[in-house]
Structure formats: structure tokens, C-alpha cells
Image 1 (cartoon, one colour):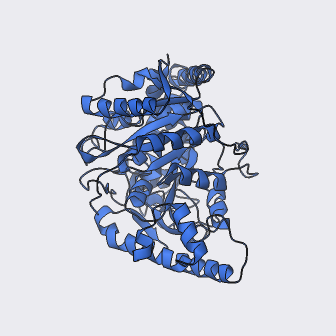
Image 2: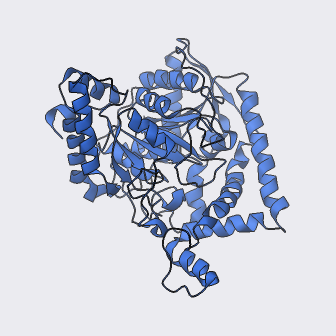
Image 3: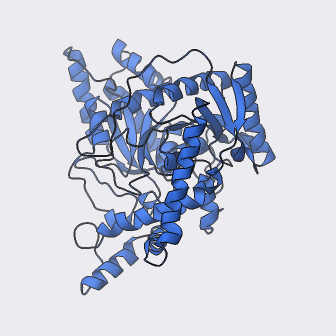
Length: 482
């Protein structure tokens, strides 16, 4: 990066440098593209670089600034996007061979809003195939690596987004969170990751995983940056009937929030990991927070319920990839049946196939009541637990993950062990509430994440509490390896 760009860590810093003329948008974008090409061989996060397109956008923004035209709130800010997001004219693969040559015919709403605000996408980045995974090891284009230890995973499924941001590629990234796929990799890579209330950001133009759980959100270097990006993307969309209007931003209450940590999330942690979270609670207490302990009766059922409901929705959503309408088709296909079976067998990876089979099983006539219906009932109980608890507390606290980033291969042959990485994040998706992970120093120099949760549509309160926690913790992470 250029010397001036090296000093920039946040969106607000970049905005100031652009407005004063210290940097042009081209210089800022060139610096981040240079960083991309310098480190990507080491961490393997980029699926499709967008150099030419990004530089053309930067030049247009510089011309508009010189002419005194009004610019958007993110004008000239470079970012990356998980390869689930459609951006017209660019390759969108969902990290799957079945879409390896698919070029998006239109731009999804969230990306369109970012573009309208002047943000510049410099790359589409890696993920687990169709977002099925927690380590980015299930990408059909190969795994990405964690900048804090290249022998370790960056998390998933949005691991490429978290790793890219941690490595200095872009000033924010956007990802999807179905059961923790923003918050978990954010924790593993030492950045901020936000899952907003379900429906706050349109899913139009984003490849579906599980439609009743998928949420669009940002990765950022600070809580303030995450807030800035969210409010650009948020809002109702006529193309997505599940979208809702987010209440007006309000001035954050200067009083410490009524907070409690979730008892169940502190049980069974490794002593070194538990000590990091306990220390965080103590620092918040010293900053004036009155932190209680709460127990959520059904939160222990969140993970098994999630892994019934999610595969069920996956099996439905992936029916469209049949080798007929779009995407790759097997050369071995001879009739309609073999077109279906050969195409899916060749181009879907093992985790995708596993989830399709699981989902089809739990939706089958003999097992629907025993599994899917029961999981839906559990989901309702979990939502009710959170609603009752938020009557007494503004913020719930807990670990984002039970461990720091694990090593490659540690869980890839043990699907249940991989699923357990989501044990502290899935409940927020089942309940539809907003949650944010902020960086916390963990054992052995690896990052952890402190998770904060609030009631539905209380993003303003969540941001206020997360900003206060960020200030109180003053987390200092070790140096990255790239």
C-alpha cells in the first residue's frame, strides 16, 4: 500500500483523507488492489478480482468530486463481497463447481445500495460451497487461510470475507449469516461481524442457503464502520417480501445497558478460553456495566434444531440446480434422470450432498412430524426465551465461539465437530434477533470474539452497547502473518 493508505484502518479515516484530498479514490483503490495481489497467494481468499471495474469506478468518483457533485456516504471506499452476492456482469459461483462459469445478469439489492453510495467492490471472495460449512474448507476452489496463522482456518462460511478484511484487503466486506457465518469467522480473524435482525437487509440477488434464516451483514474493523455499512444496505425492498423497515437511528444511551451473560454459553469451555471471556466481563463491570447471569431454558436445543431446519430448506433451495436451466451440466447425461443425478453428483461437493440428503430425509412423509415439525416447535420456544429475557435486559453477552480458530483438517472429517463451532451463534438466527461479534484477545495470540445480542430491530441499542464494550475492552491483537 502507499504510505498514506497504510495509515488508514477505518471507513471514517478514509472518508476524511478523500474529502481533504490527501488521497484520491484511485489511489485508495490501487493501494488495496496492490495489497490483494501481494498477499492472496498466502491466504487464498480471492475468487474473482475486479481490478479494471474498480479502477474505472474510482476514476468516476474522483471526477465527480472534482466537479463538486454530491457523493454517497461510502464514495471511494473499497470493499469485498462473499461470492453469494450477484453483481451484474461478474462471475458469481457460491464457491461451487456447478456455478463456476455463471455470470450474474443483475445486481442484488444490498450490493446495488452499496454501489449507489459509492462503495467500490474490488473482489468477490471465497466461502464454503453454497455457505455450507464453518471453515471455508468446503469451497470447491480450495480453502482460504487465517491471516493470524496460515495453518488455521478463517472460519466460515464467510471465511474469505473475514480473512480478506483482516489482511487489509478492502475496508469492509459483506457476507451472509445463516447460523453464525459472519460472527464466527469475524471472531476467528479478529474483526467485527454483524448479523442484523432478520429482514433488515434484502436477500434479493443473494444465492439462498436457508431462506428463513439467511441474513446479510457487514464485516468491519470497528463497530462504527459496521453501523455505517448496515444503514446503507438496510430497508424494505419490493423484490423481497420478508424485508422490514429498521427504526430510525437514535442517539445511544450514555448509561450502561442492562446486561447479562448467558450461563449455558460459559459451560464446558477450555479454561484458557473461559478466562478470556471472564476477563472481558470484569472489564465491562469496571466500566460501569452491571452484568447479571441468565439461563435460557431451551438454548441447548438450538444446534440440533438448526441442523434439522437448515438442511430441510437447503434441499428445497438446491432443487433448481438440475443441469437444465443454468449452471454446469454433466457430459455423461443421457436422459433427464441422468442429467439430474450425474450433474449433482459431479458438481456438488460432499457437504452440499450431505445436507441435501439430510434435508430430504427430515422432510419425508415418515419423518416430517418427528424431526422438522418438532424442530419448528423448538425454534418457537427459543424465540420465546429470548423475548422473555429481553423484557429484563437490553443486551445479552456470551462467547461467539467455544474455541479460537482450529487447524486445517481438525474437523473436516468429522461433520458434527464442525457443526459444534456454531453452538453459540445459531440461536440468534432461530430467534431472528441482531447479534454482533467484537474482537477479543484469546490464548496463544489468536483472536476470539465477544458476542452481544439485542431484541429484534434494536440495532441502535446493540451498536451503542458494542461501541461502549469496544472502548472498555481496548482489545489489542497480535500481528498477522501476511
